[in-house]
Image (cartoon, rainbow, N blue to C red; front, side, top):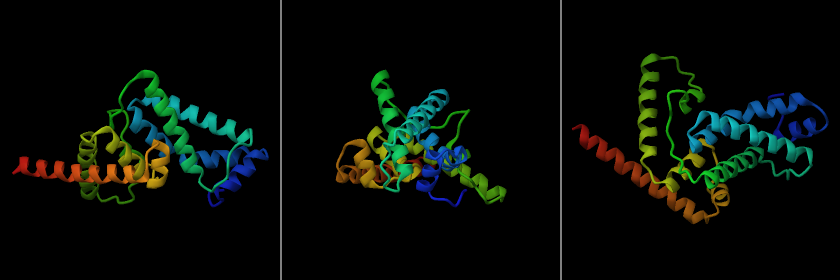
Length: 191
């Protein structure tokens, strides 16, 4: 079932094949959960929103309201993003990206290289990048997360965040400038 495309899995699910939906869920659960967690920074809340996202997906599919554009992941990510935004609107909290003791995004990402030294260096680099991303303004951090962790295009990010493509591109540009500046400051502090 892993080689079957998303639309075929959806069709099979709607025809009663529960395994097809399980395959679809397994295919994207890590990316969707990780993006939710990066926005809410709370394991239990991320799990709750993740479940709500898939309840909404199932409900939409069953009501035959899914518009097949061949982009199931982007559609699911939009639902997840909107639910995170709704949560923050309700609670008036500001999200911040970082790992906690109970969850680390880089534990979700597979590392096929078993070489211990490289794995340790990679882990240290990821930790530094997480720290640097935490220092970015909210709008810039949001674009970095959606672009690099959720694999979304700038057009999709613009539509999801209700800004123009140029604004999304600008936010990424400033995020990169700020990251370079932060890296430079960190290097100067270590000298």
